Image (cartoon, rainbow, N blue to C red; front, side, top):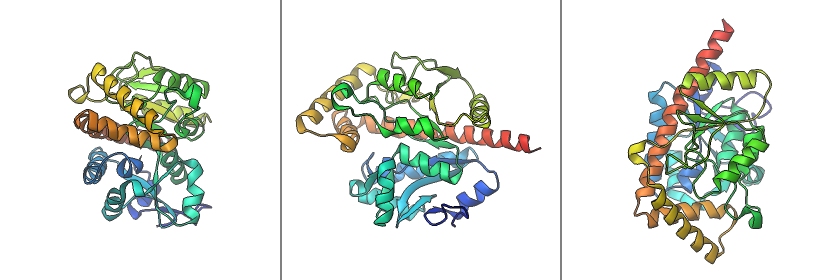
Length: 316
């Protein structure tokens, strides 16, 4: 089903997603890079479907986003998710700069955090669940490698529920960048930024909020008062699945060293590092990744439902 505004030529919503949006029901956006570039097949497909089910269990509709057949699609079929999972890294990893080229060539693209935010905002979806956001890479003072996710958060009005920034990054500089661009970082039931696989990082968040309702109220007020831009909602991985910080730090350092030795740069860096960390951790990081994404989907579903309730109250 196509939207009727100026994006109708290239933005396509599934019937379920379109119906939910037009009916004021809660919807949660989900990215597709985690399917094609984040995990091996078939675990990637299994996880994507589990994440969608998790969103549904909290009364929200999942909208997995990707570029398919020259269209920006919000709401994929099981077959489309399976296709992305099987193709894996053959699928083009799409951020903001890549979207028009992939559309023009009618190719398949997996959306990053930044690209997913763009499509979500076009579709009218306010809440997005992912694993971890991108950020300022280590040694950025030499490489200038800073994820486009941060700029997107500064300008695109979508709330991103994540387990903090990926722990392969420079978390301190990532927080400084977000502060400069006016992006609030909320800790869900924590005052400390989670570090993806770990619950702690040693860095403080801007604000701690303890319920989905509190978060929804802040989001509602931010956007209703004309303060455009995103919000980071940092949700720590459940304690039972968290990895010891000393262990994951050692593994990350080893992976970073190998990436530098092999000259891996740009948008290939994160997929390489995540795959190498899975290998070096004996698969423990993959299980942690799956569990933190499921945890984020659950919180996103609750926030989206709370936002929907606020909007209904305002109408009446």
